[in-house]
Length: 58
Image (cartoon, rainbow, N blue to C red; front, side, top):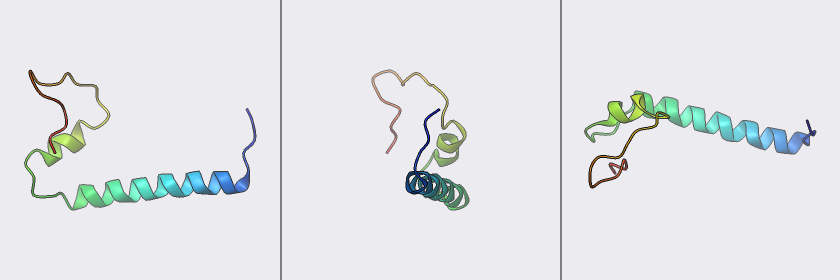
């Protein structure tokens, strides 16, 4: 495996940390839109789009 510079590692680590913090915050503060908890609970799972539509509910 190739080595990466310390700066590259720290940037990647920061991006992952920010993404996890955002996900944790969103989980604790869901918006008022219907289906929010269903969207979070199915995140990362492959689903077929509904007939005539897309998975994007926003």
